[in-house]
Image 1 (spheres, helix red, strand yellow):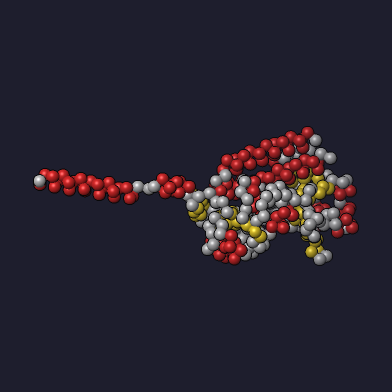
Image 2 (cartoon, helix red, strand yellow):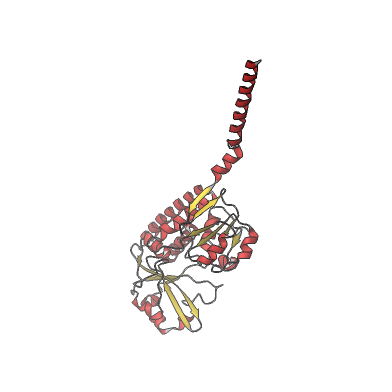
Length: 326
């Protein structure tokens, strides 16, 4: 009898031990959730933790929105939807996202109402606004731009968004397509006799009676793409450390070489963004410039976003090749 009691006790203990082990072993669902979890380090050094690839994503800046669409993710919320549709046609919105306000001042209440998995912002957004957004959802902050490596920063941002949304295969496809487009464009320009041609790209704005011109130096994304195309940047002004953008006026254009090819982008739907085909037509300094007299001024198509991702840059390459081959 005693032996039976000992055996029974041992069996009970073993059963309890097995039962205890069973309670600590992760279930199949738990294992899947753990495998799906994503941890990223953003441009501010913050750790961004997601339970899985983000599906409901809000973008506070247009380059992030473009990249989302290019990666196959329809954004749930977009800052200044009308502005995006006006200035960035490389990756059109396929859905009807909620307008969350301006790029510099998104509505926290609107973002919160969308209950996003992730908000993508850039370092252009004030830190106080990012802090508020983090109370609503995880925020992935991208470095807006880097004049030391503009193309590298563009692709780094694309890769971060792809990791956050589980679309890394599409990211690789986009990067390869961009490299192919650069090679194709360079070959086309060389074939048209423009290898090493002097080139200056700018945009401009009219405020009241004041015309401001913004040169895109070699540190700008556009400038870096131009150099990849075999063009030589003719601007001598210095650009800022992030975007590589300079500042000048009409008189500053006299410092460009006489044989430069000058290109710009404006937008008919954005009043004040077209000084080169507007108020400057009657400006004596502008009309006296040798490259203007020679007809070496090229207005590139509306809707090519100068600060976008690979799709915008592909669109830009095509527009430059078409303009210079005329």
